Image 1: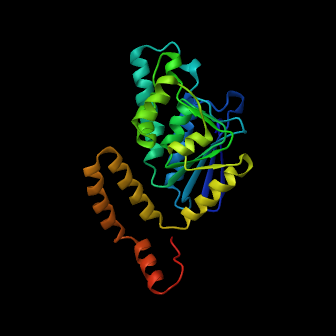
Image 2: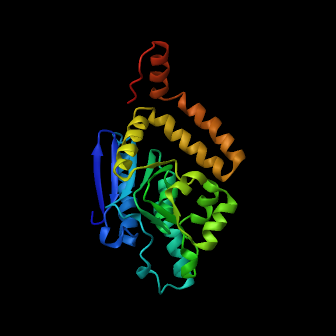
Length: 256
């Protein structure tokens, strides 16, 4: 792969977007490679959690590569958003394995949209986040107008969308955009530590929890229905058998 680095630490995969000379900006090649990498990691049963970050200390992803679409027509623009959402951003959100965004610097435009598509986010104290698309005469096209209000509320989302301003990590934590703020040299360790904790739990139960939560974010009634279905599915898994037997035997479960 030309734009990614992938490393393994036991059951956790660390995926690093590696375009530091471009502040890890998303281009079509990066989106394609990330999509392919996620497909591979999804299929690998030995991978139980994923940490996604950017190369270097300056940026997670500083945005989309504007040079690729500055001359697009409105039809091409719509297609750009449609393909990107389906191929990558929705793909991340609907992974059956937890994806943690490790925001190590600028997360702007498509970069923040990518971070928001992760299941949750940790940020460096030096991170800066924003959706500055209105300063270019456009709006976020990779799910930003939908995921940001879900995370921070409509009022704060409209503030960020309409002003295009960047926010610091402490404000991102206060408004619920990130889950935790870490010192720069502790960010990846913190993400890997929580990923290892997740990896020790039932992968089948986590997959069902993701499915139920995502359904509820789209439609609350459907979310409750999906929870019932997913709850039932868990009873047919070997993880449920192992988890309940371990509990009753007062031992630690060993999930496969």
